[in-house]
Image (cartoon, rainbow, N blue to C red; front, side, top):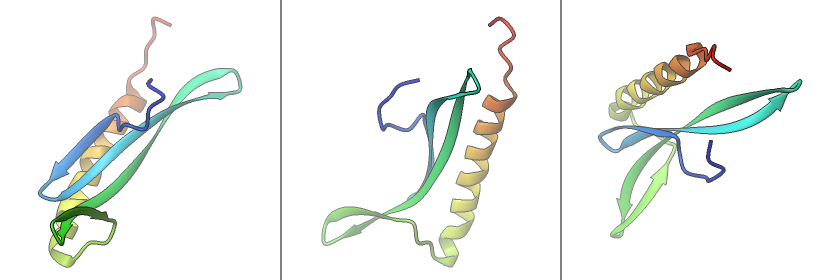
Length: 85
C-alpha cells in the first residue's frame, strides 16, 4: 500500500462521495491493512469549491448509497484471503 494521503477508492454519487483510505499495520507480528471511510459533500461558495460532512434530507440517500458501496468494497477486501502467502 502507498503511504500517501490519497484514497484507495472513491465512490461518488452527485456531489456526495465516500473515500476509502488504507493503511498497513503490524498486529502481533502479522501485517494487516486497515481501511477507513470519509464521507463528504462538495459545494461551491463564492465560486470556490468547498467540502462538508453535513447533509440535507435530499442528500442522505446519496450518502447512504456511497457508504454501502464503500462497505461492499471493504468487505470484499476483508473476505479476500490470499492463501499463496
